[in-house]
Length: 262
Image (cartoon, rainbow, N blue to C red; front, side):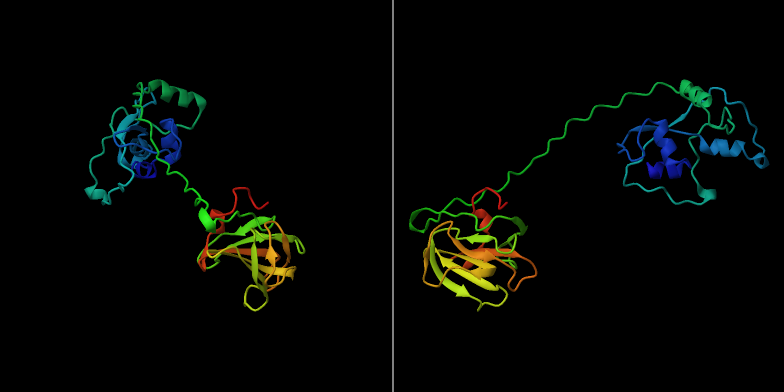
């Protein structure tokens, strides 16, 4: 719309209004637009070029073919400019805008062809990836959420787990039954940390606690309170939670039940 209006020296908003379109409407190849005879009006308004003028009358609008969106207006000098397709007769004069003038222009317009209906667009949406099925056999783990709160950090190769925000002193729970294999502050960047071994395949880790309520070697059950949420070695109160499968971090969201943390 901008390119066509620029080439024919009309305002793109006027061009859109003349064709009952919005200024940002998408044009199709082959679509016809009515274009105001700006060149003829400018010529008639300039007495130096010797042009004669005539009344407004019933001057019909000029019909031109739309340019594809990717096309740009040709760059030419005035001397080499191609001949315009605008009709030179009858001449028109520049008239101030009014409802009466607009009504006369619309009455002079030929009937507009109805645009062809476009076929409906079919959009293919890929199904959302499903969570990993729970493991079966001796390594099966009945997972549960370690705390209530807002999930503020998702799993990534850098994060290695998820972060759940909360309040200082809020309870932290064992996500599944197991044995506490670490309880302390020896791992830099984790603050007060608890690691629970659930079986030969899975471990879970709970970091940045304010207080640790279990000891190494202690057996815990699912849902048991094992710590209080805090901000040890962290910039805010939160629980950093990890699940490790055969020592490698995996996305906890693929193992935790579907209900949200909060």
